[in-house]
Structures are given as structure tokens and as C-alpha cells.
Image (cartoon, rainbow, N blue to C red; front, top):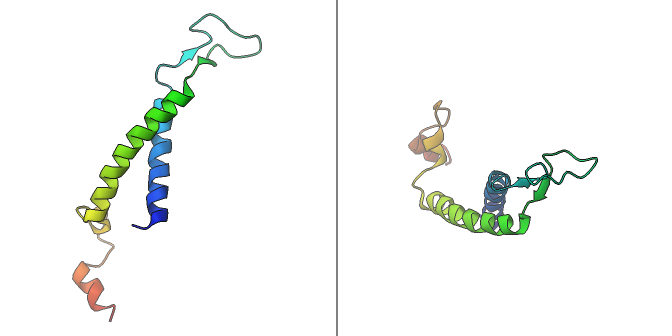
Length: 98
């Protein structure tokens, strides 16, 4: 795995985690009965994005380490994910490189 692949993997994991964590413990204007005129009642009143971003970074770092470890160890390869048998077997692929 190259550096660019590692950074892209971390970014994808980070954004997926962030989108999952954003709505947790969100207090809306409707929840606290302080609706600003011209906004929806579901608009956030207290969102805590900084705290959620830090939590997301920690969770993403752990998930990235696990996933990168699996990828680098070769425990699961692309050939393991080939459900339709479209890839040639590994021995045939090496013989035709020649």
C-alpha cells in the first residue's frame, strides 16, 4: 500500500465515521424550544462538531490500523473478493507475465 492509498483509505474511513457520528446527541432548536425565526425546528442548537471530529479521528485511526494491517498482511486479497471468478487463478496470472 502506497502513502497515497493509505491517506485515501484514512480519509474515506474518517468521513464515513463522521457522517455516522454527527447526528448522535444532537440537540435541535425544537428540542430546546428556542426556534430562531426563519429556520426549521430541526436545525441544530448545540452540535459539538469539534468534539465529534476528535472522536471521529480516534475511531478512524483504530479502524484504519486494523484495515491497513489486514491489507498489508495479505490475509484478505482482491482475489478473495472475486465472487464471479473473473480473475484468473494466481498461478496462471504469474505464468502469462513472462
